[in-house]
Length: 117
Image (cartoon, rainbow, N blue to C red; front, top):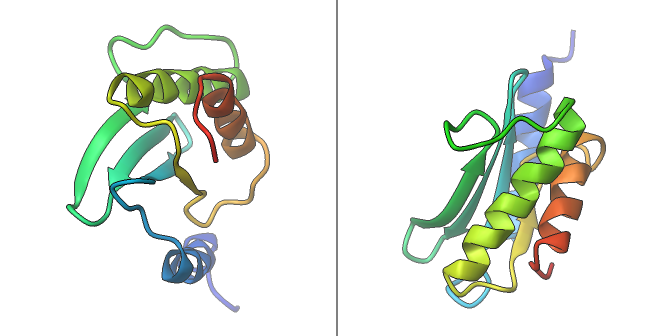
């Protein structure tokens, strides 16, 4: 057997991160997807700081239907928080996941929220 899903994702993730880095002018919007929820962070890699974040499992998050709908709501929420922090342009880091389903929905929500990538 050639490996597991997680090892495949880690390999893809390393390839993505070779070319993609968040700067102060254009931070990285990183997505993590678990079976229960989805998380998004806006990260400045030059200082190693998280500038804005949102999660579908946070206490202040209001449930919004199925997982795809929740992902879109998380995207809008992280965009809203990033814009409040003075960030309008980001680099999208899909973190080794396919740009499909929940990851795509989060990206669309972030674009609707005012982020440019």
